[in-house]
Amino acid sequence: MTAPSRFTCEQIFARLDDFLDRELSAAEMRLVQEHLDTCATCTSEHRFEATLIRDVREKLGRIEMPPGLALRIAERLSDAAGAGDADPKQQTG
Image 1: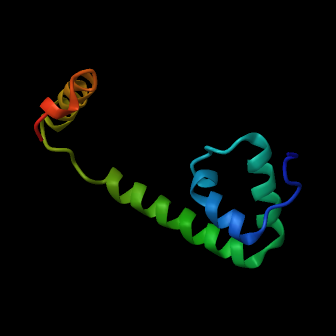
Image 2 (image 1 turned 180 degrees about the vertical axis):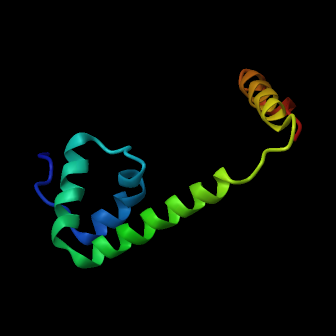
């Protein structure tokens, strides 16, 4: 199967989050950008999503983390990674 030369609006909406996170291949990034350059509806949705993400990141950047939270998170992640090798039936939540 050959790669598409254009994306439909439906295909753009399905890829928009990954586009904003820069998680698409270079070819897909190009196709999404080409579509956004010509489609006002998708551009409006892209602008909304991008603004929402920017605003959330900005607000999260102003929240002060409680002392020790980063350490507790790292410990839990480490414990969870180690538990991934264990029998899931024996794990308790």
